[in-house]
Image (cartoon, rainbow, N blue to C red):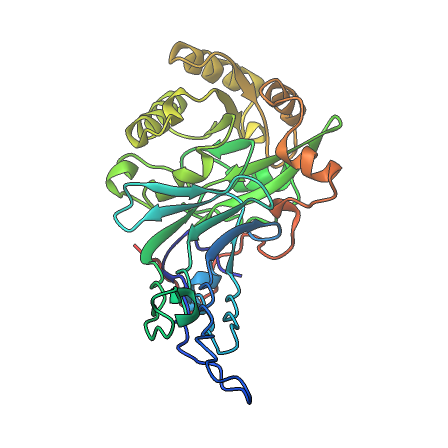
Length: 364
């Protein structure tokens, strides 16, 4: 399943049904009078956050959502049937934005959250409702109110407790494969990761979700490399793990580059707690790791954790540090207690990129 985190869709609620103009036609009743019923209410457009989804790929193929209109009023004072609401299921973490992307109309952060975005039109009045002592045979009626319509953007921000950032080839995919159930693609070249990935970490009786995003390079805020479009997926994280390649040319400069891009992106990422991890410890000796650790601390890191995503060395100490930033109960743990599975535990999307020759698509 392909990953898609932005989509533009058209929404329209149902119009109300028109009221009826009708008069009684019964034997032995000389003056039957009006009996036209009211029209039914149009359907609402309702968004619901559901478990088991972590991509907006379905909205690539279905981009127009229109609720049904209400039923016509009928004679014998029969009110038209109200239309069913149109239910639009979205992944947890989805935001609904206005067409100009300036206003957040809805933000879905919990499974089962339900928001009525557009209301259906009210049904029109039938002629029976116009009957008065002086107007005993009214023929007027209402056509029913029209529905509402609008274009909106859907933007998915994956829900994760911990985010993984770093330059390309810093070993993020290897690291997330080491500590989670994810099957991330690993390769000896830059930008192996093309889309965000989620994985569940189970450490010392705690469960939390780790998000890996494509690597950042200098100028990502201006669109260099893959750019910074996937940084939105770590906006909700409580702490960031910054992986730095010990075999790189200048680890301190690598740290400053990523921090500068986080600051340029904004949205509070520059103020999030960060844990600096010096990765690929298996490719260097302890003396070199210590020297680079001192350089990173001099560059602003509070603490440096030497780790190896390939062998697992030092990972336990790093995860111990992560636990200190988590709440008493993570969202994953609360859902597990309630019998609901988190999207990161579902098998629908495993983080695979489109294969060779397959079409890729982006709404922007």
